[in-house]
Length: 304
Image (cartoon, rainbow, N blue to C red; front, side, top):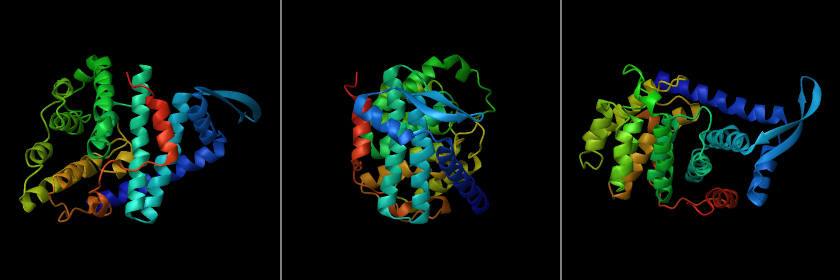
């Protein structure tokens, strides 16, 4: 498993470097556009760019700008910072970067749209993140997940049983967690799209609050091994994006939920959790910087 973890780290670092360098080389002022959106609510942007050797005025919509900001700048930058120095401040900043992914989901929900290429595998992980660290937004992002499942129901229900698509793992876990938080309606809707849960997820959900150290260590190990084996650049796998491969939020959130119940987590031994473990137990709400607060205010406005 250490070999697989090393391969993931290498792949994620490449994603970070390529994303950040492409932002620089494209010359699109993404951060300037983000400021314009926050201040004025602008949703269409223009920039002068070199296209096939010629200067052209290129238009970008808000979906492009938010996506490039979150996945091309914020998450890659904060992953690199955490890798350079693993400390509690960088862990909180990493959580904040991933929270912007949640905000993008809620923006799409308000706009009645879905981001191209973003699947239920992605949204279910956003739900799981919220449960651990931003639970005041949990039902909002769950609404987006259920909207996506409903809009794509025929396609999802017709997936081959041989293709996992998170249906026996992270989608199931998002339903389980929503049940813990009292949203039985959202839970039941999601469960309709799940298949028989993977044994690791059954063990984890049945023993989430166990006081038996060995049992907990065992289910964390099972989930970690599942995570490593299912971190592939293939949409049929649960963790098909580099930034989710890097950050095992499904395990981190479960451990955070344990810590919130006063249960220990410091005995976990799997190397996938090694860098994150000292910082997982956090008091909520997680502090947000001024820019994130402004972006949150602009996106949420008056939530319907």
